[in-house]
Length: 297
Image (cartoon, rainbow, N blue to C red; front, top):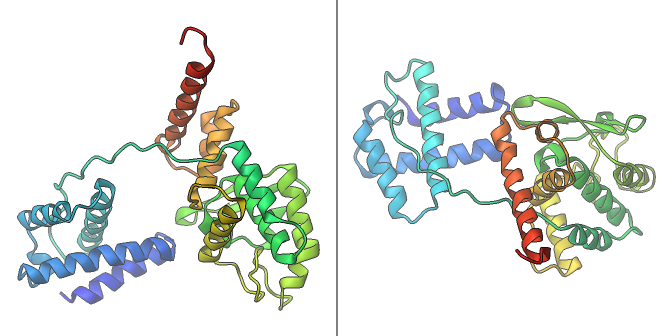
């Protein structure tokens, strides 16, 4: 069995059937190629020759590298999925990773911005140049909808409905959901489309909502760079990653009394357990507020 051909078949499956983003399937590719290096080191000639003891040894090697439990779990999960695909395609008979226990992940509360920090970031956007107007609309929309950066970069003009202030979002696995956005995002988007986007666009046929300075679609990397620059400009001491706006969206909704299942639908979570982590954040903030203000706390 040709290992390189098997890997490419798996990547094609993730692209075509699972509709995974390039960011996701490149993680799979990297993890599996790392396992190929391990196989070579152990003198294992083929994927079908890997046994349960080899899988356990690979897990031990990952732990010896000092990797975090989440990283180890992801790598093992990638290879397990790969073997599951090979088994489905009748290229192997058994999955040696079926019985490998994944290490439990550390339960870390998601980081989020306080409302004062959100305002500082909005102030840092500016509103005079076409790029500043775009950045403000981008930030307002990410905070207003809690969408992923990958979802935001794929938005088109046709996905917006200004009459209802609602947005069609294409999420993981090609799943679609409608997400409303508020008046601040509505106004920022209208100003961007009417004043800024017309200046940035080079081709009338370009349908992507957010454009870069060359008139092409704004990529995920471009969005991350914009957010990093906003943090520097706002002089905030913490680092930003795009998912923090998603965390902030969910946390602020729950802190202000939103229903958990409604937040699940807005985020596009398949499982309620993925959304419940934000209730821990809300409870933690509630406890801190209690301890800070109750006279007999």
